[in-house]
Image (cartoon, rainbow, N blue to C red; front, side, top):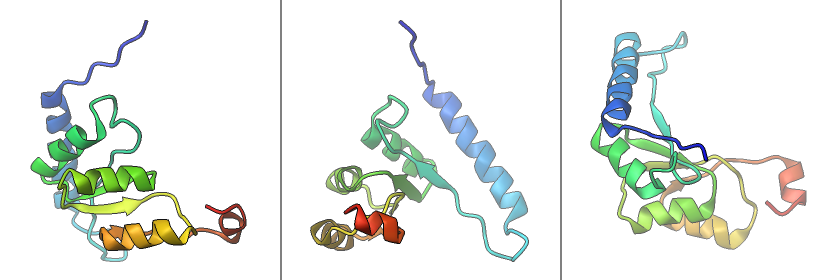
Length: 118
């Protein structure tokens, strides 16, 4: 059985390298500042979505991205106060209300997504 091993100190080192590069370059060609977004969807690389999110926030990553409403709400329930971006869209009114109530950044989907009820 294959095993994924993630050393937290190596992950923190990688975060610091990315932050340094972003700080050195500051903005893109249009003058917009770079923003580092930690994608924590799924089980957070096997670390666990809450644990990985806390590690990222503790190391200066202030925006996180998730794939599902459940993941976004799980982070809020764990009292993670970083900005959270939903990578997928939804047209379900109750999900939209939950996301707005929990200050989650919504993604706008296509007409096809609306027709499929997502």
